[in-house]
Image (cartoon, rainbow, N blue to C red; front, side, top):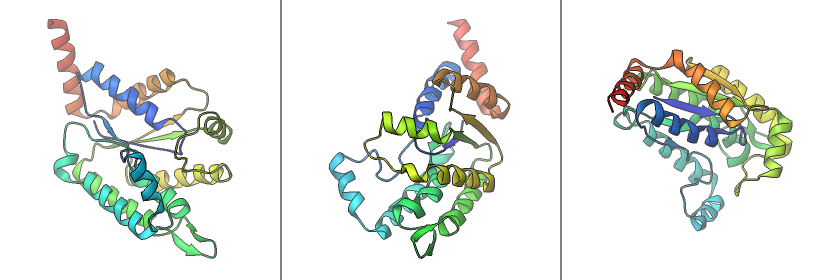
Length: 229
């Protein structure tokens, strides 16, 4: 299975990814974890390394992100039995001009315009994704601005990326990038009122017609072996 889960911070991407990993284990007998390290600062870095990385120039951040995403596009890497990611290129197109200092079209306010390098680059990445793995599914997660603000204020992340004043704009930007995406195998999930289990159930229902033949065979094989056991 190949998924790219995108959406504004606090919509529940990481939570859903963890549920999908468990679901894959139940349905297919196992699978690979999600690559969830495309937000600055990379959560895989040690705390002191995160603090140092936040201080580096936009040029270094841009190069790091570009190389990180190129690594995850490696055909031998991507063609594994599962290659699932959160954020990835669409998050980069939304966040980079607004928060990282690069990737947009410069105006009087700095790198804040959504039209520019990272949006164009996102489409180039999608061309590669579709060439390597045309069965990739784009999962767009949403929530209302009030819900996002409430989650952000009640359970803030250690390194918040988004700012309260930008939430409506960010929702619009993710909507734009998804609408412009070349990946047309898509799922939309709104977590505004849904519990984690309700969101997972909706994912299960919507992913079923989009499963690849290989994944259907994995499910069937796991069911048969489970009955035999």
